[in-house]
Image (cartoon, rainbow, N blue to C red; front, side):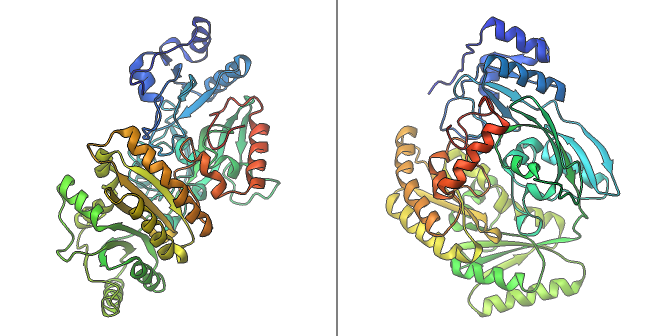
Length: 471
């Protein structure tokens, strides 16, 4: 695998790109090609021809027009935090990095909306909302580097989906430069708009294959008050679901996450954190809720005691301060960063919530049988049916052999996903890594229609080619 990409762009194309965005905004040095040509995945080597950094929508359009005229492949690039290879440039493509489209404008306090460039970082939008006394609820571990355009292109989910939904629920409008170079202004912030097809929803989650998201009008909300966090030790997945049903029936949860004992051990050992309590458990559930009054906490404690009496919970802890709540959240949020040192083989899968225990048990049996000598870390957003399977690479095992062994089992895992009518990609997209398995979640008729839509938006096939499916 080549570690130092080398640009193979012609002088003529280089000059044309410089004319579009400025000489200093076209990068061809090996470090820039390696940085901008990849995301968080490591299954493919980056090999872009060049990186362009447009500073306006007009410059994005100019790049697309050039790409159309010269039949150049483009890969949109945001915060490069994706986990499916959707932002990988492996075949000499030109990377269109949207970092400079990072302005927040036109705050509308009546409609609670704000207009963001595609390069606005998630945490930047969250901080802006807080300054206005409002709240942007889509949140995940990569919020400090992920960008709004990328979030929209992958329909990012995260830790608050059970209460606030996915990114698509917060996009009031967006602007897209299609593969034909047209600028579409979709929905324009309207709450009600039934005038024909909602093309905005087609673009959300399309992973840059229909065009480049350059701007979005994002919805904001009332901020939650006095968030309280509980971490509960749970003996098995069936009990996790009983706990979820119990709490959901009595309280409005902001989050309901889970992680395994091995995940907790790794985080505690490598992040300098403390176990939430000494009693070990097979799994842990993290609950978050608003505590408006003492009665809310009393109700939560009553539910906890009921779950203990039923044998669904073996121990638990509740936050007594903001600092304690943040420390408990780190037990869940620091897992991805912690296990990254083992270059994990990841599967981001989902089914309906009620099927999760049987679904996970089947997957775990297959994985344990196939990888008896590998460490398996489970965590996820169990309140929305999404679980993350992480197989850790042993230090002594070569990467190629590790990938080959894990790839053999993916088909078996996805056959289970199909039986449970689930998704092979719950929130990270399809990209390069999942496209061979798309048929486990989408019918042949659905995939055929997707390809037809792609050809309408991008008739020359220049937008993120090879991602999701091949034409």
